[in-house]
Image (cartoon, rainbow, N blue to C red):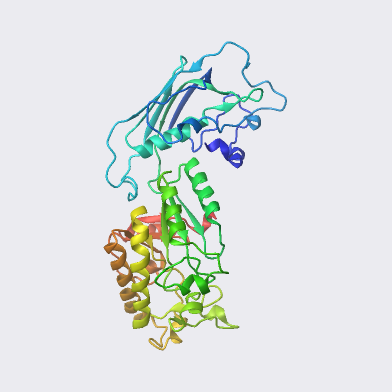
Length: 416
């Protein structure tokens, strides 16, 4: 299936090697021969899989793997050895958390063997491991340019594979850049082909609020870039469910208290320092400025309404929920009539209460909170031991977070 994404071909450094194959990511162990196996139209799998008839029908002709005008394909009119059977064996029963696991709870290890006689065996501990194996299995086969038949030039094959990292994630910003739901589904397909297992949707920010919250309807009605550029509860659940069945857990981020000025368009009075001009940079990392007030009962009422609406809808699909917390600007709270200070000793206890309030809701919904690194490293908040910290500024933040006893998502901007 990875073969359906042609840009991956550019990543291979040995394009012209005669034994090159389209396996990506590269397995822990891969041994193969040079025997040719053809796929019969009536090939059957001995494991119940949805859409099994499509597994080997989306292959490509590997032109880029070989020199121009080279005769790399097996003769399609010669005597053929066919792939006779594919036996898929799952060695353990899936745990109850298989569809929304915490990182590391699912064993994704798998093995693949294919004999020169055309017998294939796929073995894994979990159904997710089977899914990863099938992605690799499809990458062993190519389409023939003459008649469209499908073959593998690598028999016999022996593959052992398991992920190096328990969390292999991709962050998609839906607030600064609206993407149609269909585009997000295509992204999930690409992540599955590359054996990623998490999609982080950064759904709200200062620029827009494109997420429909029925209990707070004005948020997307006035906060989206325009009417229609928002995600309904039905669309959000479809996105999460689509990922779930492809081994990609889709989790949501609502970034608070900073990066929230879009809220002011819908519910004025909750935001301090809204769209200060021209010196917005005094109060925010980017325009338009604005942060949720830190000592306001109206803000807490708003957040309670938000969490009671949203969390029960997303909890069935993910074990995680991201509450943001990056780039909180201290100066903006000099403009907050409930605070009137930018001093750390004033703001820290207010931020602590704010984060605790939100995380209590996350845990009550059966999910694990995630925050950006500043909550731990800049503001030195006391976070629950379950809280995962996402580092984004440098590698030192990763080391500091681990030293403080927290799991860390490493996605520092040194690499993007």
